[in-house]
Amino acid sequence: MYDFIKDPNFYNLVRGPLVWIAFIIFIAGSIYRVKSLIDLAKKEKVIFPFINLKATLKSIFHWIIPFGSKNWRLRPVITTVTFLFHICLVFTPIFLLSHNLLWYESWGISWWTLPESIADIMTIVVIICCVFFLLRRIFDPTVNFITFSPDVIFIAICFLTFFTGFLAYHQWLLPYNIMLYLHILFGEIMLISIPLTRLTHMFYFFLTRAWMGSQFALWRTKDW
Image (cartoon, rainbow, N blue to C red):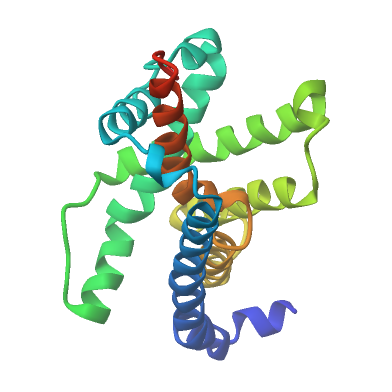
């Protein structure tokens, strides 16, 4: 296995066909997931007629702002970890210098990048948050009760993607090229897993908040 991973052909595989496969599954799967949810909502006949744009926007705004909703304020530790995790999870790979260089080499496009020291800290934050979420699912009875294998798997995928990237950047543990290949592979697995696991909540969140915000507005109250 080690010899296979360090083979340059493996790099060509993960930098070539697997990249396209990962993006195709991610894009097509995400579109399918969102469309399926919208189609299901249309069949119910009682969802879209009640969607209130003003209430939807208010709900989304209060739930994407740290401590913007009462539920966030009641759980300060979870709120802090959750927001740090999601901010670093999304913005680190997008604005990482090395990723930016890959985009430029492949497509000739580039954008602003994070200072490497900041990106390094954000990577560590994601790693620590993954450990926190895993331990919470194991030891918190209220969360453990509703924890299933896919929940642990997608935490592991996030962890391994950032952990291998961190090790590759610092050239620790394994030779740089081996760790880089593993990082790319786990990154592709993470992309593929988004429409196939609970990571789809990145899309469902907005649709859920639209429904909840509108429903609570109908009751003349608020969901935040």
